[in-house]
Length: 310
Image (cartoon, rainbow, N blue to C red; front, top):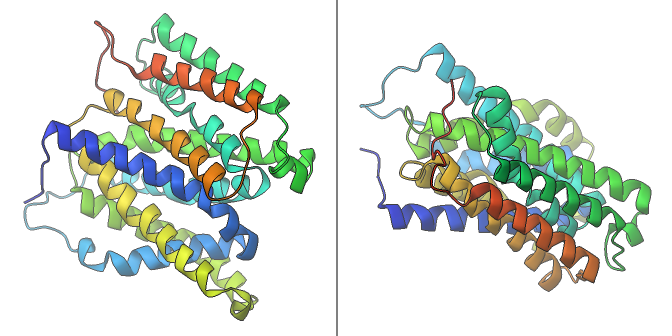
């Protein structure tokens, strides 16, 4: 039988999940500095697959998946694992954790827009205001200068491209959040975590294996290997299981409010662990984006709490 948490426990799972996502988003910067992107992603999925071998077994009470559900499982992995990982790792390596945190604070607004475009949901003026806040926050971020950030280390040309890639990761994460709610009605959180990670491993294997055959593993210090293990377990196992467990008892629209912990955690790790600075302009951009996030996710009197996926 699948474990069903209480509503407060579900909230706790969502908070912890997004906090871990923000932390590993920031920590991929030192990893990407020493490991090629495809190799890093491949190792992440490989470690996750080993950790979740027992979760792949089909429970006795699991019903056969429909064709639609099978496609949703694949899309959940392709968008939420494969493309998100490539865009996020590459983007963070070209920008900085604080900038990534501000950009990722637009996730709830993007989820709302996706539900309007693909699910034909009605979007209130408050949500459109949140979208505008996200755009203003990202616009302010593009003007910010950070002496410890990617603009100083790699030049503004690669910094802007890194920000674009991080926003692409936002699109993938928003799709992941919407699809995930549907999947929790047909699969347990453990099965979802294991199956979509396996798909990610299969998709990443050709380029990952090719890169591994040409890489000198002896150049990687022990502390980076330990960080890699934490990243792999956090990204492939813990965050997915926690998020899917929370979604079992929390409507998707309400769950969106807890993505506030993603940019907060990424920025905190960037400042405290990676030595990045938080300029006044970046702080302003972060505040505007945070306001937009709250506008998009705090439930109103007539706000629907479910994000149906047809």
